[in-house]
Image (cartoon, rainbow, N blue to C red; front, side, top):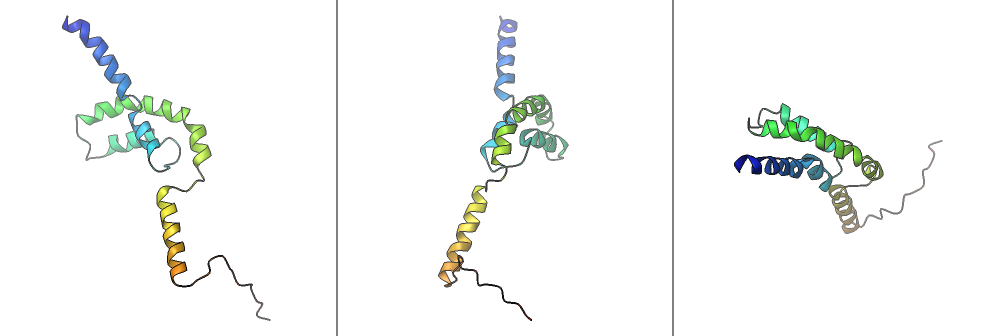
Length: 114
């Protein structure tokens, strides 16, 4: 009975964990192409990764690479879009300029030094 349950449980765990790095990487800021696979490789190489996590990362790597490949059109489309932190920084700079009375929309014409 135990052996009968082991295969479905193990298969379910593999499918639930597959592509985990890719999913996590695509829910945050834009990280370029193949962010899930890059995250897996970075964590595998890291000295801070525990011995128990390394086999799971190795197992996840091909699934993350496959999911990252499917996400390439999405990554290409979003490559030039600003992330949340960039938007916040731009907004803060805009507000700071306005509070100091600087008209950021007006650029004075260049004069020649002839």
